[in-house]
Every structure is written in structure tokens, then in C-alpha cells.
Length: 246
Length: 291
Ligand code: SF4
Ligand code: SF4
Ligand code: SF4
Image 1 (cartoon, rainbow over the protein chains, first blue to last red):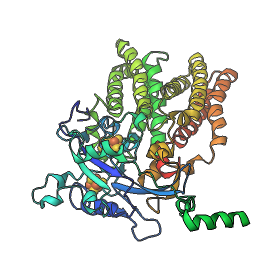
Image 2 (cartoon, rainbow over the protein chains, first blue to last red):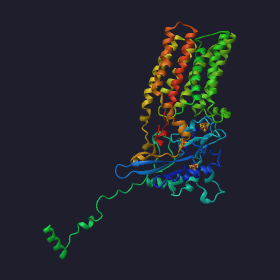
Image 3 (cartoon, each protein chain N blue to C red):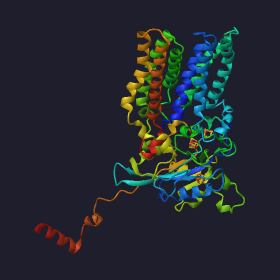
Image 4 (cartoon, each protein chain N blue to C red):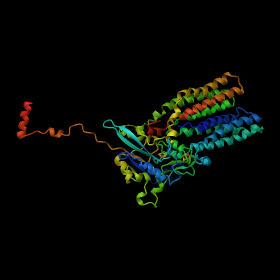
């Protein structure tokens, strides 16, 4: 059903730390690996070893150069996957009811058996979170690893999204944003987590934690405190005499 | 946005078809016998052919019937309903004209209004998308409906409605172009804002996330198509609206005059629809430092 729920019991999503992400692309690979064999149609590749490879991915990592007003330029890596928006425009445009948002946890999913592959939802998503699989002809998107997070066949520590589980720097955090005491809610409060393109009124669940302020390199000499010492006694006398001579 | 031929064909042909059906339904022309058959047949053919073309770009067209289920939220679903209802509504009048049954024309009048409603739903599929600022305004329905009016008037040989249509079309095309040219800037999104990195400094792309284009880039960041924009706009204005108006005024009132005008209009409509897609920029391009 493409009517959005007015309320979801939980708001599951990711807090993505732009300070710690090193751009290793491990989450991209882990995401493709997990989602290639579980939920729905496989994430196909076209011409994977040729000159013009093409394939479906649910998570992409961009890399930006950012020049602050003062100080050196920084490289900031920027993972981009579905934000599981509260007012998801991708859901309401869908003519078939294939796209939906779950009432229990707010996850936005595609029922591939109903999807006609019209691509309209991918147009409606401002964040480029949906890709139409060229082999299956159905829309693919991040499932928040719905087949891991509730999966009791997996050991406890694996019941989180593949991208979160694999990140070597712990830059992706999974949790419930409806619970103010959850790890992700606290991180957002502490670090000033923000929404992407809030003016488009999609109310994303996922939040981005901004890079921390970098130290500014010191211009003054490290010996500065020493140079200011007033000598006393013999050294003081010598200082005075030498000062007069100079 | 990628100007897929199937979508251009679909919107242009079905728009013209519903335009013709509207004029026939409202009784502007009331052909009889086999002439009626060909007239109505052309209208139905264009409308249905256009709708059929729209299924060509579906990944799984065999499930197309499912598109009727979500009319409460989805303009695409509403369009599916509107077009089928309109075609059914007009069938008795078409039959009556063809076979000379003399049935009441009231369903034809309702059907004529429904024709415009259908094209309006088509236009809203595009106009609703906030992520494509150029489309996200009233000029899109105004343009689509003006095309329908002009195309219908030309195909049904109506001089005055054709002139009104052409004038409306010039205004609508102009409004769409001028409003569209500043729409992206007005939405106020930049790479820095889309990523939130403007809080740190000025952001530029250092490295793309993938080395060859993906679905998003092929579908929504279709830069190649924008090469001939400057040349295509005059063609769109000239062929879609100005020339047809001049032709129906200057040439004698004859079937061939209108056939020629309609054909030129069709070419202009296709050019303008190409521009409609090619010039539309999706905000996702910002993440790639492109538009
Ligand atoms: S990020 Fe895009 S695909 Fe995901 S819920 Fe929001 S609009 Fe839909
Ligand atoms: S591609 Fe599938 S999920 Fe997306 S709008 Fe079309 S039918 Fe719905
Ligand atoms: S939550 Fe799962 S599906 Fe979503 S980006 Fe991470 S690994 Fe991919």
C-alpha cells in the first residue's frame, strides 16, 4: 500500500559518521555480497569484466574534497544509501503498491512481485537510493538488511546490517531513532547529526554526523614561552650587560 | 532526465489522441459512417497506441494491471484509471456516429472533459516530482493540456480552437522554459547543501563512487542529450505552435492543410518533449558534481 503510515512504532535507520569514514568501500562490497543472495532478486551485473561495467548496488561511497575557510583542504568520504524517509516520496508515487513503508519499524521496502519496473520511484527519490536491476527489471533499494536484523538463525552480533557489521572504522551505526536513549539518538544529539536536503520535506530517518573540527596548525614558535623568561641573579646581570653592548 | 523514445512517443501521441477524442466527443465535428470510423479510429489509435508505447520501458510489463491499484496516492495509477474510463465513456458516441444510431451525445461531452482530465493526470506524473525542479510547477500541466488542445483541434479541422490552442501553447512553452531555466537555482540545492558539507567548507568531487555510469547516471544525469538545446527550442516553438497557426490561416480550408499542420505540429511536439526530458535536471546529480 503506497499510503504512508502516520506513525511507525520504531524508526530504524543508520547514523553515518563522516568523521571516521575512510572511504574503503567495504560497506559497498558487504552490502552487495549480502543482498545478492538473500532478499529478492539478485543484484545483477552487466559486462562486469568488460570495458564498460554496469551493476546494481544499494550503497555507494562518494569522495569529496572540502576546502574550509582556514586551514588545509580535507577529503571527506560520503556513503549514500536509502535514508528510510518518513515522508518517502518514492512510496506515494508507486502505482502498484510495490513500494511501501512498514508500520512496525519504518523500513521502506519494495515487494518485487508487484513491481512493474516503471522507475518512477527512482525519479521521486532525491537521494539516488534506488536502482532498477537490469536483469530482473525490478526496483532494488536498501532493505536495512531486514533479513539480518531480525534473523534468529544468525549469532547475536551479526543481527545488524551488513554494511554496519563490516565497517572497519565503525562509521556506520544502526539503531532506533524513535528511542531517545538509543545509541544512534545519543550520537545524533552529541554530534549534531543532520538530515540531507531537509527542504525537500522527505524527513529522512538516517542521519549524518558531521566531520569534527580539525586542529589549526600553530604559526608561533614552539619556544615562545621560553623566550619570555626574565633572568635573575648572575644571568640577569649578564643579560643586562650584553643587552647594553648589543 | 533521459529522453526515452518510448516515453516521448507515449506522451505526444496519447496527448494528441485524447485531444482529437475530446473534439469528437464534444461534437465539434460529427462525421458519419465510415468517415466517423476513421476519425474515431485515429483518436482511439493514437491514445491507445501511446498508452501501449508507455509499457515498452517497463521492466515487467506483464504485471501492468497492478498499476490500477494505488489511485489514492499515485498519479501514474490515476492516469491508468482516467485513460481507461475515458476510452470506455466515449465508446457509445463513437459507435453511434459510425453506425448512425443517433444515441444521445451527453456521454460524449462528459468524455471530452475526461480527455482533458486524463492528460492532466499524465502531466502530474512529472509535475509532482520535487527532485526535478524544472518539472515541479504548474507550467507542466499547462503545457500538456495546451498540446492536447492544439493537437485535437488540428486533427479535427477546427480553425478557431486551433488558433486558441497555438496561442495557449506559445504562452505555456514560454512559461515552462523561463520558469524552468531558473527552477534548479531557485530550489537552492548545491553539492555542499545536498551533502551537508557546506558546514565544513566548499565541497567539490574528489573521486566518483564508481568508475563507469550506473542506473542513476544513465537515467537522471543524462548530459549527452543537452547538446542541441539552443537549436531545438526555436524548432519546438515554430513547428508546434507558430507554423500550424500560420498554415490554417493562410492555406485554404482543406483536409490536406490540416494534415500538414498536424504533421508539423507533431514534429514540434516531439522536439519540445525531447527538451522537456533532456533539460530536466535531477537533484541527485549534485552528489556526482553533475547535473
Ligand atoms: S532515501 Fe529515497 S528511496 Fe529511501 S525512503 Fe527516502 S526517498 Fe525513498
Ligand atoms: S519501479 Fe516498481 S516500486 Fe518503483 S514505482 Fe514502479 S512499480 Fe513501484
Ligand atoms: S543496511 Fe543492508 S541493504 Fe542497506 S546499505 Fe547497509 S548493507 Fe546495504
